[in-house]
Amino acid sequence: MHQVNNPELFELLTRFHDQHMDFGPLHDRIDPELWSMEAHLFEFVEREFVTYNGAEVLRSWPAEIVKAQAETKIVLHGEEYDVLPYGVEPGWELGADRHPCGDC
Figure 1 (cartoon, one colour):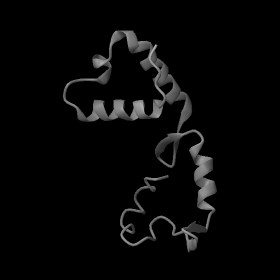
Figure 2 (cartoon, helix red, strand yellow):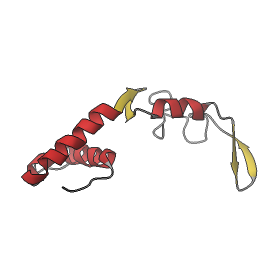
Figure 3 (cartoon, one colour):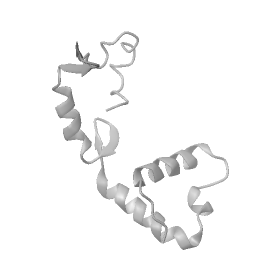
Figure 4 (cartoon, one colour):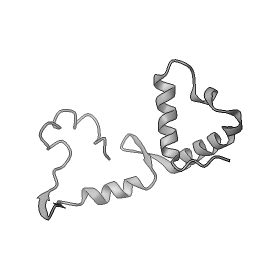
């Protein structure tokens, strides 16, 4: 059986393909011998992803996001800087009130 090390990437590729390609669902292009692996990957995604702040994320991310949001300083190349909240950075003010940070 083929090993797929990144089910999240498979989910992303499947969604992108199904939403943006003109030649039908990706499932129709998968070798029938790999359908059980496809089903296994989808089960993993259903089990391991949750909706947090309107976005689908790995189950572990909400706690990591909350922890990261508590950080007020960052050290880069030996220099300490203040962490700027989302929507405060120059150029990001527009839209911050309409949707969450794409990196979170």
